[in-house]
Image (cartoon, rainbow, N blue to C red; front, side):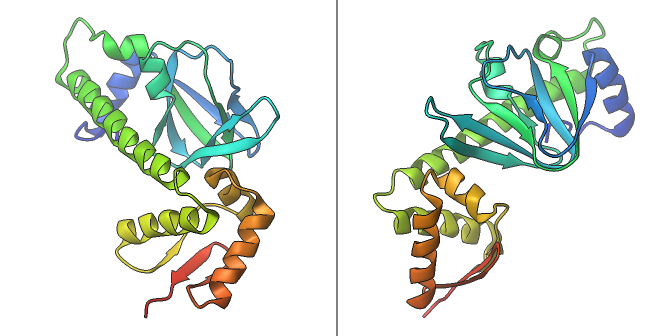
Length: 210
C-alpha cells in the first residue's frame, strides 16, 4: 500500500518528516463529517472505517468499507476540493495516521529515495481506487435489484476465484452500499434462495452452480 517497498526504519523517519499525526477512535465515532475542511490523507493502522454519503433527505449510502493499510480522502484532497463531500465513520475501534498532503508533495531537502517511493505508491493507490469506483458505477447502473446483487456477488467471486464468499456488510449496510431499499433487497435475496440461485447465512454467500 502506501509504504510498499519502504522498510520499517525508513517509514519511521518518513512519518516524522511528513508531520504525521496518530488518532484513535471508537466504533461509531466520526473521523470527519461531510463539509469539513480536509487537507490530510488518512491511512488506517488498525480497525475498519466506512465512507458514507448522505443526500439532502438524509438517505445514507455507503461508498466503501476500508480496513488496515488502506487510505481514505486521498482523491478529493489531491483534487484540492478542500471540503469533504463524504463522512468517515469508525466501524470498529481504530487507529489512523493523518498525513498532510502538502508534506507528501514537497520532498524534504534530503530528497530521500523513500519519499519518492511514497509519491509513486500514492499515485498507484489512486489509480486502483478509480478502477474500483468504475466497478461500483457498473453495479449501480444495473436495471433491477437482482442484477445489482448478482453484479456485486460476481465481483466477489472474481476476486476470490470461488463461488463461496463472505461480504463485509450487514443487510442494512449492503442495502446502503447498493443504494436500494433494505426490505426489498431482503425479499429479493429470499426469492433467489428459493429459486436455487444462491445460499446464504448472515454475511456468507454461495452462488449455486448448475
